Image 1 (cartoon, rainbow, N blue to C red):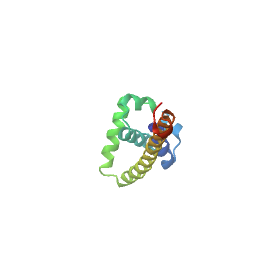
Image 2: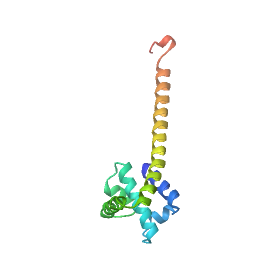
Image 3: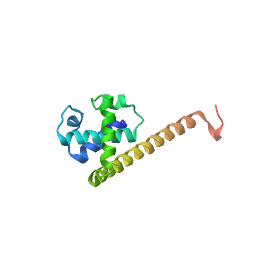
Length: 126
């Protein structure tokens, strides 16, 4: 699962706003706030460019930059937003860490299978 998908799903689940609404052109206050949080966290947890994130959320890259700045500004004084982002961030970090560990484990298993098949009895390589 892509990182942007994980972030969007976690924001959607936590805030109770559908993924389709977050990615839509809807401009009601709660949807815009959810979209801005998702964009902020996408910038925080991925190396994706403004254009890639904008395309993902159906927004212009300038809107991505605006969302990031708006959330940064609100974080300086809004304790509720700080709490929400902290909770969502912890969930995202747990998922990303688990996915990384799973990926590394699968790569290790593949490596062991390859080395197992390329070595013979008593470790002599064929």
